[in-house]
Image 1 (cartoon, rainbow, N blue to C red):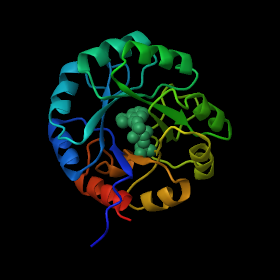
Image 2: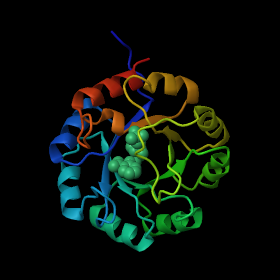
Image 3: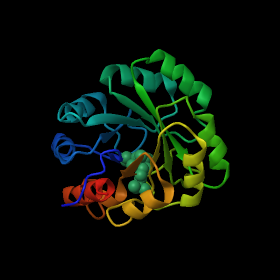
Length: 225
Ligand SMILES: O=C(O)c1ccccc1NCC(=O)[C@H](O)[C@H](O)COP(=O)(O)O
């Protein structure tokens, strides 16, 4: 029997249907990631659809509501309507700065916050440090130059930079970017994050719907010692 490593946090995006939400929480994934917004980005769920997905998440799993928008008023309004335990901010670094995140936190005091940080080079260390103590989790992700949002690239980045960040901040770090069942153990060994995230490599090939066998394999690989 494989011993479970209960301390490794797991997070799966993007969960877009009530059935996926229920199944993924039953697997034991800690954070069930739902992409929400006003439709400015592809596949964003509006409030009513997101609520139907969130309703099916079984405790102790919780919902992480991802906003790719940098429109703070929109994020605040939708977060009030959804009331998710976690708001995940995925707008690019230039568009959504730490001072705006601090202001958002003040207006949503009961909500936990996660901030994506693009790991594009050594400058990512300073970007991550600017969020240290500002958010509850820092998510280190791959980024395509010019994108106004961070992530969903399906590719890994330089894990040595991510390791440096893990060693230089106190805030728990979740590693994302090109992770799947086959490389998550190596990623954990290399970076030593508090948690791991997967989107593309736990999708059904060529789609944005989840492959539950891949999700379960990812979860098992991440949490077995
Ligand atoms: O979940 C999405 O659909 C999404 C879309 C656009 C940007 C980010 C998105 N998700 C945020 C995450 O935290 C992802 O899970 C992360 O970017 C990992 O992506 P991948 O490299 O595809 O595993």
